[in-house]
Length: 214
Image 1 (cartoon, rainbow, N blue to C red):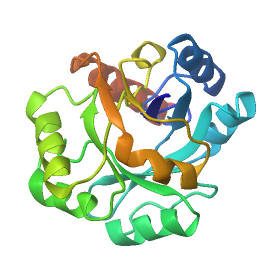
Image 2 (cartoon, rainbow, N blue to C red):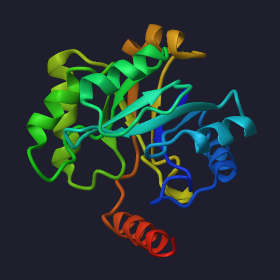
Image 3 (cartoon, rainbow, N blue to C red):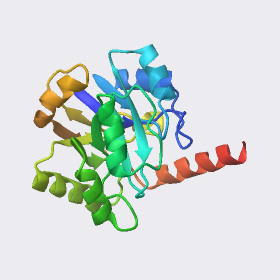
Image 4 (cartoon, helix red, strand yellow):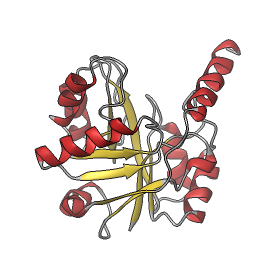
């Protein structure tokens, strides 16, 4: 199966893809599963799951107190922002969800310490993020995951429709969190396109426009 574990809909302030468009684009890109992981909310993921419940994994990207992100896969309830990394991971697991570490080194300050925090709780590590435009970020993630013996994934972190399909992870067939855990050791990252920094500027501009428009 081809799976993208990290994408965003327009319910994220810095993203433009509607839930329906995300599902259509995922199908066109040949993705068997796509996790919708909006910032701090799950309503976009639930809307996408209404369109295609077999293809969509409901998730959330959570901003933790230490200034890092965690993703919960197969969550059923919102995980609050500004919890500690350990508490956020606990909230995800309490729902039966899977803890995913996105772009563990892609932070401007103190990346090694931040990566150590999220890798300490992760069940699956993003070793290729198509938006991590500075190549050492992904190389460091891959090396750290390998050193800890953690399963590795590649994801698009798509915020715009054309980004979907720029990376995915190949896995044996699974349905639900328990089956994902059973096959995650066989995950194979498939990095395809590394996005330029321009897309970050587009996302920041979109977020600013929405903030000003409130």
